[in-house]
Image (cartoon, rainbow, N blue to C red):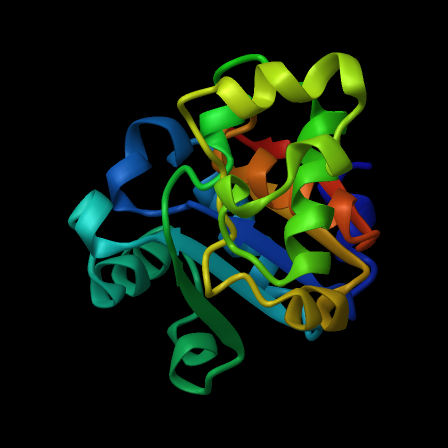
Length: 193
């Protein structure tokens, strides 16, 4: 889908991931287009960004970054865009070690079902196929669900268009959570870094 096609649908819900100063080297090419898209929307809009501890970016830094790239400042002032600070790399322990999307999704679903936030609290023998649970159980890295990930919030935003980045990093983590919980979204490939 092209951005111009989407612009005709001004009620569209949008989720932007990690468009912020710390990643300017990567996202500066899509930031003006994303800001233009946000300026033309009346649907729900959410911008997730990596927290200050990880990036050094404060909330004001992120606000100013969006405005610098063309966002109408009234959208921030009037609270029409919700900015959500997030943590970094909560699923990457498995993503970066070659664990399949299927098993990551099984892990997320099991954590939600059992009310735990850390994969180390799961009974791997119950969750995963027999030929795979030993490899996962013995893996030094874990995955976790941060407190800020509110499944009900994502469901309420759904269906939505997702953009930002990184394509196979932070944005992919949000996609995997959505896939695990059957939350509908569409990736805007031309607005992803």
